[in-house]
Image 1 (cartoon, rainbow, N blue to C red):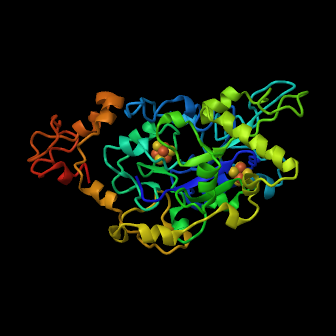
Image 2: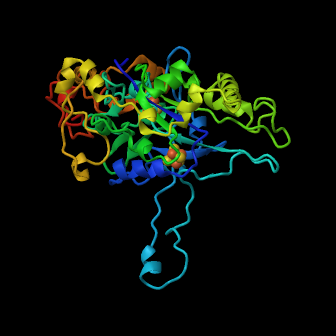
Image 3: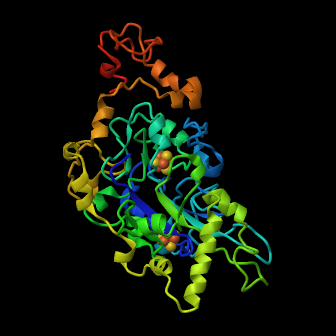
Length: 433
Ligand code: SF4
Ligand code: SF4
């Protein structure tokens, strides 16, 4: 648990599917080598398969006993690939043909854009923007045998220590939202960092800052003045995605109002909803019906000329209504050793490339604990979920000849050319560091 928790609320009634958020994130964080296919923020049409393809059917997260649920690693093809376009042909070589991608696309983010649920007289779909949920109980963190993933004590943001990550990808399997990506160039896993360098300077996340639909609300969940506290805790109109996955996501959604079908105008939006209520329950859990009923009653109240505080907040025309970024509060309540943190470098391109001064952030208490923890102790929950397969990378590094090595299985020695002999521990093994 963290002292504070930054959170985001997205009002799905206002998203116009323009992907400005996706591009804002891409330009800020994922334009480096090996990151072409990564969209830390993506926007997908629902009902739909999403990105990567079918992510919400792949398992992951925790079961009722808080054991990691099995899941599979999406194949690279399920993400699609970045496509090249030869603009020069049209702009400079006088060829008036349309600019087409260099090869036939097979899949990509928002592949099934605007398809949704098809019914000739009552078509329906809505957009679902997604980032890492910076979960209260991150399955990715639990699954990492290297303890490379940590949750910041002071604001709950989940990060990957790029120095510790070895690219085993158990985190990608374990995340039920499939919001971690593997960089084939660096051999590390990377994910959304909730724009923490911006928050530390009092600026809101890039995706929220650029959103023309003004659908995003950002603040500290436990700060009564923040819009996210009001929407999630006071009015109870914002719900986590797939609450049954057991990770307690900290990105919340105001569900689509869900208009009635053709010919049912004027009736309650729950009487004969165009979007099957079952699909909304699948995404947001059973409480979604209560939220829609409450929003409908607030709407009627406003239509009758009375004030609705929650609708006023959701309209959120001005920045100060939608965001409350409080770096001073976070800093003030942070444990003293946070100031000493030295190695929570964000995933993605180095900040110096962006013209920002590198100010190495201090390490949190839990982070320094990770540094000293025995990396060979595999959480029981991980073993339960993934079986003995998770032992394989560790076992391949173990050698009976390594003095003091705490790994029990034997190492073939071949991989390291017996160079490990004589090292005091796996911590000194060149394969580990
Ligand atoms: S959404 Fe996935 S990657 Fe993000 S904190 Fe939760 S489990 Fe980890
Ligand atoms: S920028 Fe805003 S309105 Fe546009 S797709 Fe993203 S969340 Fe939706």
